[in-house]
Amino acid sequence: MGKIALLFAMIFMPAVSMAIVPEPVQPLAPVSKELKKQLIGTPVYLQIFKEERTLELYGKIGNEYRLLDSYRICNFSGGLGPKQRQGDFKSPEGFYTVTQRQLKPDSRFYRAINIGFPNEYDRQQGYDGKYLMIHGDCVSVGCYAMTNAYMDEIFTYVNAALRNGQSEISVSIYPFRMTESNMQRHRNSYFAAFWKQLQPGYAWFVEHRQPPNVSVNSGKYVLNGSPVMNDQSAPAGSLFALTKTK
Image (spheres, rainbow, N blue to C red):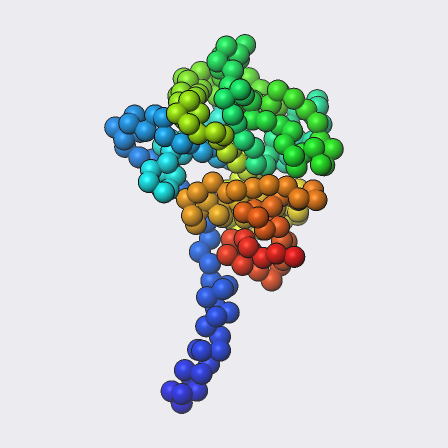
């Protein structure tokens, strides 16, 4: 009987280890205020979650990016879903990058960071729009508006990181935390197929604490060199789902 049980375990263990993948969890608490101050100038990474109205600022410590602080988004417009055209009052979703030239210290909305919309994915979809920002003054017609105090701090870390040698800063903008339970909750949305393209980037950061390396190929987001597959047989967030190629 014991041999039969052992044989059963050997046959099914690979499948079980593939399928049982922890669902991405809420981020850990921010670093201490003292350590946060010391990290001005370290490489940074931004995540935005529309549904929670939250912007998260991460700083690199060793080989990992750790949460420095979370900020309440004062205002954004258009609800969930990507921005598609000028004048639709939507705030973007997707993977963007920021360089030094995209910083606006003298913006009419206090200070601003141009997120770089439209990116290559947006252009391949035919989306258009311009001047989509993270900025102050708490007003939005498609941007992510913060209080001036929050914008001061975010701008300081982004500017210091770029001036200290980080060539570009990744900004990942999600409709919500892309856990499997949230994906199921929004499974009937018009944007569900698009959100499946974003979920592996979220899961990658949860697992590796490194910003996802995202590019675009044939109108699809490509994560770390591999096409993002909407394969229903692969558990969302698994390494299989993250790396499977055509």
